[in-house]
Amino acid sequence: MDMAWPMTQLLLLALVAAAWGAQPRTPGAGMDLLNVCMDAKHHKTKPGPEDKLHGQCTPWKDKACCSASTSQELHKDISLLYNFTVDHCGKMEPTCKRHFIQDNCLYECSPNLGPWIQEVNQSWRKERFLHVPLCKEDCQQWWQDCRTSYTCKSNWHRGWNWTSGINQCPTGTTCRTFETYFPTPAALCEGLWSHSYKLSNYRRGSGRCIQMWFDPAQGNPNEEVARFYAQARSAGALPRGLEPLLLSLALMQQLWLLG
Ligand SMILES: *[C@@H]1O[C@H](CO)[C@@H](O)[C@H](O)[C@H]1NC(C)=O
Ligand SMILES: *[C@@H]1O[C@H](CO)[C@@H](O)[C@H](O)[C@H]1NC(C)=O
Ligand SMILES: *[C@@H]1O[C@H](CO)[C@@H](O)[C@H](O)[C@H]1NC(C)=O
Image (tube, rainbow, N blue to C red; front, side, top):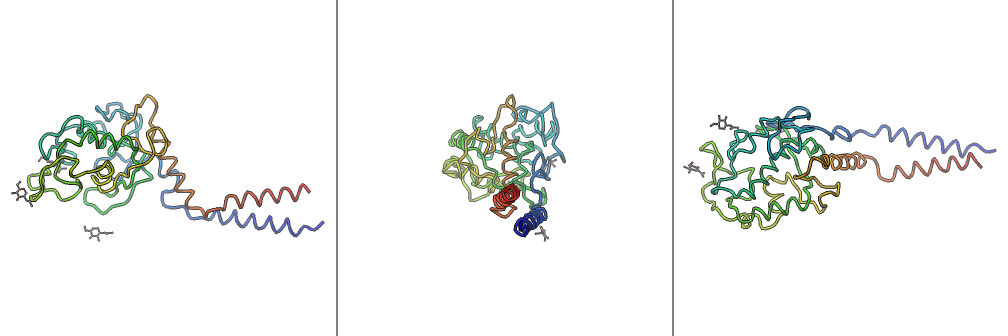
């Protein structure tokens, strides 16, 4: 029997497998993206249980990047965390404000945003989130509940007047309804924090978008979401079509040996 063909196949299989194994891991690929805290101003170095988390941050108490005192502070009208106020155009309505508190809880407490961490060159933090896919309903509800509150800027990261120590509207801007500065839900969720969020087309419960709001009785739905995007990212690091090629080679090999 002519053994040249199966031997060639075997060799090819070994080569492809070796090449696959030698694929450089993308920085932070796979598991490094899961269960991590961002390197920023108030985050803990590692996520862990925090049974005293405050108010709207309690859903994260089993595994949090925020401390109890951080969670408490971010519920205040002018938190000492950033000396930032959402009341820069008069008092914000509570139905609107609760979304900003929840946004802060997600930012400070979530250990599931690893796939969207980016390095930044900022004095107050080394890393940020970019394009976190926020579930459609969470963004829409935020926008709906804030339409009638007031602001003077469409990007809240930059351009404030900090001379008093607290963010104030810079001269030349006017306080108008949110709807004026953020005409759509996407304008709000994406524009507010320089694209920290991306409005997702996926819905709550899909396992494909990050929920700002969740009931901890059912566990943290964002764990599955982070796993999905971390896997998608490391799979993207492999040359496309390699897996089916390997499988068919192995199958051919077996058929040949059986025959
Ligand atoms: C906020 O303001 C307080 C009081 O003026 C000050 O002690 C604190 O350092 C400020 N915090 C930040 C983050 O700027
Ligand atoms: C970061 O910013 C500082 C000044 O703000 C600058 O000197 C430095 O070159 C920057 N580094 C990078 C990598 O952009
Ligand atoms: C900043 O606010 C102060 C008052 O707190 C005001 O005197 C100053 O003109 C403002 N500057 C700018 C650039 O808005």
